[in-house]
Image (cartoon, rainbow, N blue to C red; front, side, top):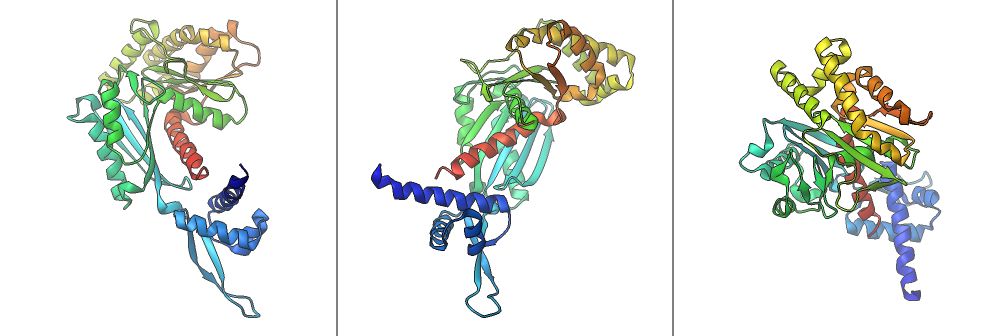
Length: 366
């Protein structure tokens, strides 16, 4: 271990300088870096040389010297555009792609509406083409991708394989998982959409160690944060609800039928309920009561907060009040049931967050 000490110290100093430049978002001189990190000038110069060689920091030029003369000061900046991270959400009727630079600045988002992605000639190839199209429009080479996170509706095993998905059978199984991994030259992380939503909600709330996150649209998903960590269960199925004949599923199908008949979207239908449409209100209240019965068992975890995201947020009090009323006998007086501040896009925010977390972990590990 004694021989490893210089290397470890060099790694710590390098990480400190890198974190400073990444968070600063602007060029800094050696003296300013030294003052902020309390490192000596030679130590800062050594760290910068390492980071430049790794491609994570750029020397941006020279500023003017002092009034007394002397050599111009060199300035350095985090290489935010030296790579990108990609967050993809795949649903039966929609694929969305978000691309960010390495400082988490959004570069582009694009959404593709679909009749059914499973009916595409090559569903996984469609996702690959969508990602490459967004990169091409931003003049980003595919080899700049550092990680791709793919959010799906279904049970996702620890290794990233989708083991069960009624919505995305074309993404289910080991062969589909290997195919998806092979389409990109960087790591691909696959995660359940409700788990992603729960991760996003936990960060947004910034406090409780335990969070039950419900993602509700035409289906119901659940993500569990316990003791500050995502709880997946032995098979990745923690929080999953089964049973196509369950009351919530029957009501969901009636809602979907009505949405198709109207030629509207799910969020528009839920907004109709909030706006007073009688038929829409009756279906949404029925949906709330059925989901309350479905999720009552989750209260055994004694969560301080249940956060609800997804398209259902557009139903407002029409959904939330009967849900609360149905669950009230099993709630502690201070247990909160609230809509997500991230709205219907909480799972997309979670995909972004997971991508950033992965990149940060690898950025400061090297």
